[in-house]
Length: 306
Ligand SMILES: [Zn+2]
Image (tube, rainbow, N blue to C red; front, top):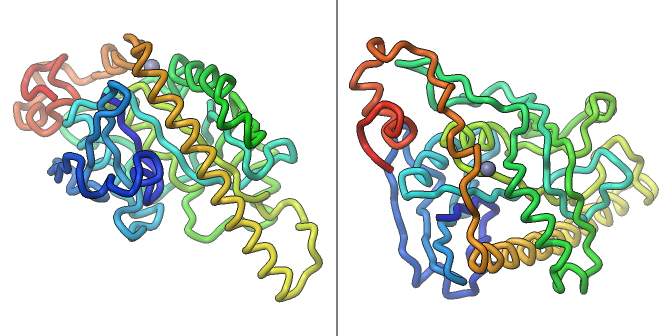
């Protein structure tokens, strides 16, 4: 099953107005609390797609408070094996223009108020994360993007890679921070990629992130002159960019699902990410821990299956 985590209204944008009424709705409980909202499952182009709005219905969770662990665990419980995530970002480079799409390949994680792992008690688990996103999935997305008539029609440039700096927020960067992020090698800055991607790896899902720059972060002086009127103009421009970029991201997601339906995604090393990752000696792992982590560890330790 393919999981999608994205902005509010993603399901409607992908599948039309009736999305909220017809599809199967799952209210999934997890050892990490409730996910951001119900997960809706639709079958489309031969692919079962589970959709979750990251910030909840009505955008109620700020980036620091999104229940990332419950979200990814709930999707795992439903049987999601591949996860596509999307999110708006600021651009740290001239060449990553607002309205472009970026298939992110690297992360610099600056978050500090979120639990970055499922395994915070009962066992020590260390997942490989040198390549935070699935190379196979990223390649497929890039190939789909190159063929997409919808993206060609809007002349949307799709970058096959980019380094995303994930900051805690919720306020945006200072100029000094933006320049530091650039000096670090960041191309994009956002607030939601982490720990979502880490958790997907711990859940042994193939995961990719489609980021869409809506503006140049504050490092780049804006073209319009300072003052109240220009602030309004800037805001209006950002809103237009968000709209256009969201539409491009939707077009890419739609094309990707169709492509996955025609040529299913195969096995991948992401799906055995924990095979060497459980460092705790087996006789020291309690049945309670095995039960808690259930679908994350069942294939290695027994217990509940996803
Ligand atoms: Zn993979």
